[in-house]
Image 1 (cartoon, rainbow, N blue to C red):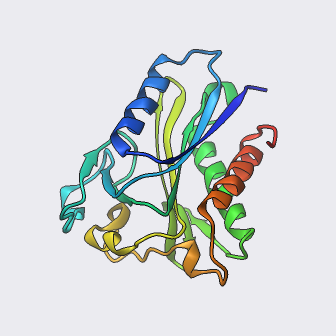
Image 2: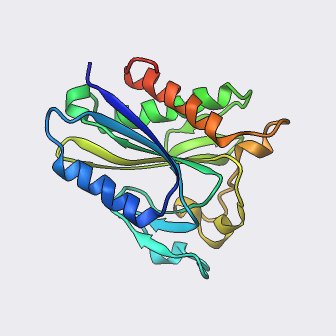
Length: 207
């Protein structure tokens, strides 16, 4: 079984993290361990490859960064758990669609552990609770290896989502875990649970 390294990076700037992800993907070979990075970013909008400028309604003082992942514009900020998956898909025997399904299932399972019933949508990647989006997905695959990943709204300032059409959908409601549970949520604990569900869905040994 290929080795998996999981790094909990805390709050890190978007641009240097993006460059580190690109570097790892460009330099890896058949023996390089897969990595999952769990982290948070300071406030930033990221515009995916298909991103259209009209979905940025009023970014204001929040920077906008163009990236090579799939999907439209999204927001990252403190209190949102981001998971970047740098995996050798050929070695894992996974196609992109299967990876997306595994990521969605991991998030659904994680949310179920908090008593929240969530589900993916066939026509719009991500995970939803009663029609409101709680997690976004966006991937890029290069030479059979994935990078970028997922973002789960845990306990954050949701206002910046109103400055964009999230994922290109006008009026899409966004929701976060802290609004759906009675007790306070600890993002570090959420990160640990996400690591376990990702390991399970992707077939890695549990930590």
